[in-house]
Length: 186
Image (cartoon, rainbow, N blue to C red; front, side):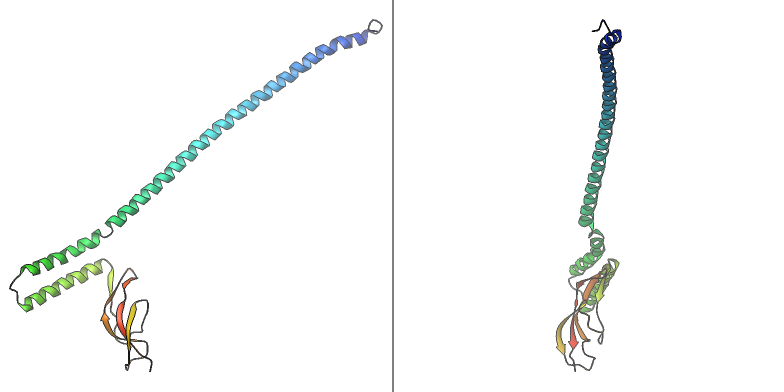
């Protein structure tokens, strides 16, 4: 048959050659695609490694910042009373000096005690420790006062009659409420 029709024979012979060319062309295309995919993969792996490195560095920075903050808090707690203690040292010195005097008169002892009390009050005030000492007739405040008893009085009901013991606060926070008697309702 191929002898009778030369075009068929050419077609039959050229087809395997075209197939080989097509295979080569497809192989080249696949090879190019594979190279592109490998290049993209390498680029993505590099980007991933870079991001992992950035993550580890950021995590290390955060851990270091947290550790430094904890150390600072620890130091602040440990030395928070340092200034307060330093301001109380002169009071301790005065008390010790007063105890050394064996034959002081009652007036000298009283003057020494008053001077020491002034030192103590000054030290407390420097450290923001403020006395809570309400005057008679002041409205009773349960946040700053503790009523010990209710007494009949000429004062308005629910007001402070007497202070039995001063209270103290530090930076607007009550350390100890003032112990007071309060007037009863009429």
